[in-house]
Amino acid sequence: MMPSYLAKVVLFCLSRLNGERSLAAIYHLLNGKKSAQTLQDSKWYHLDFLFGTLAVQKSEILHIANRLEHERLIERIDNDTYKVTEKGEAALAQFSFPAYLNGLRYVNETEAFWRRLSLLVQTISNLVHETTFEPIQRDEETLLFVKRWLLSRRNAAALAQSLYEELHRLLSRLDEKEANVFVWRLTSYERIGLTNEQVALVLQEDPAYTQLLFQHVLHFFLKTTEKESHRFPLLFSLRADLYETIPLTSSTKKTYELLQQGRTLDEIARIRRLKRSTIEDHIVEIAANIPHFSIAPFLSEEKRQQIMRVAEKLRTKKLRMIKEALEDVSYFQIRLALAKRGDGDGDR
Picture 1 (cartoon, helix red, strand yellow):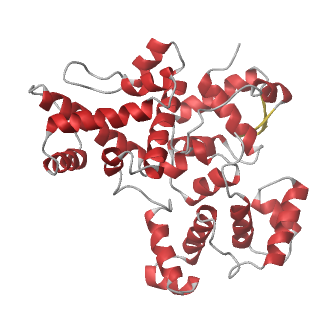
Picture 2 (picture 1 turned 90 degrees about the vertical axis):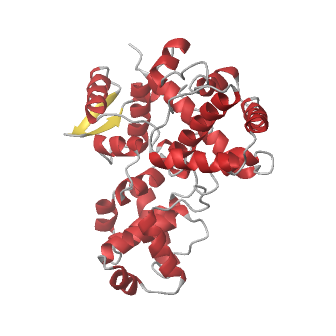
Picture 3 (picture 1 turned 90 degrees about the horizontal axis):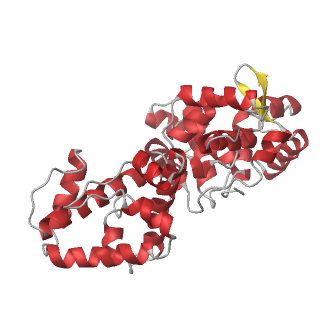
């Protein structure tokens, strides 16, 4: 029996994790938990494009793991850790993901951008046709943003035409299925948008696949409007305040700002009233996400190369195993070295 699409996603993650992380790591990754461990794992194992792209339950992942084990696609190492078998790797041979998925890069923008855009489309559609409606989005922040956005522009008919043209230009770059996955989710004056499950039924596809395809389209929108903001001024304006050139968590940003002022780790810990270990977590996150960030103040090039040689020799990213093989390096330094090795998206 062929695994479901979600099962293949889990199998792919297990393959990348190589028996070094538990099922909980996959659960936190797919749900986008912004902890130091999950953020660093997403980079180290080249799974960052999946970060926060699927809302799944722990019980689902456990059930899938049991099924994969029964099918001999994975084998248990210990209570909650698995390795993919040769049969499992063969099952992944033709498996691929939608090309524009970039979960970690757009995790702080995707949901807000979609809420704003979907409410805007609904509102303009009803304004043009002079009909009353119940907003498809209910959170106060989105309602206020769209209200202010419309008040600053006024002419609903002209806006409708311009927004249509921008969306059409974007969607024409995608194939028909991708475009439909997006368009069918929109609500207008005459119809309610479909849910992900309804879209999956129409397409006769796995719901996990249609959800990732939808995320792929939104990430394509975000990437394209970022690069071509002059061609998509309306759509870019919906995410301009969300747009971040450096995708860091809010606490890490504060640490980064103090680092740029020349503060030491101990000074930052004192100023922020945080443990030094927390500041070290922030440094690892910065190193993983900012290509030009130098780790030289914390780790010499000689030690970095030494750590990388050991990691490659042992074929592991397990900190304890690397630490046991090296006497004069700290866990912090190992994490920094691995964070820099994790630069880039990796192969999918």
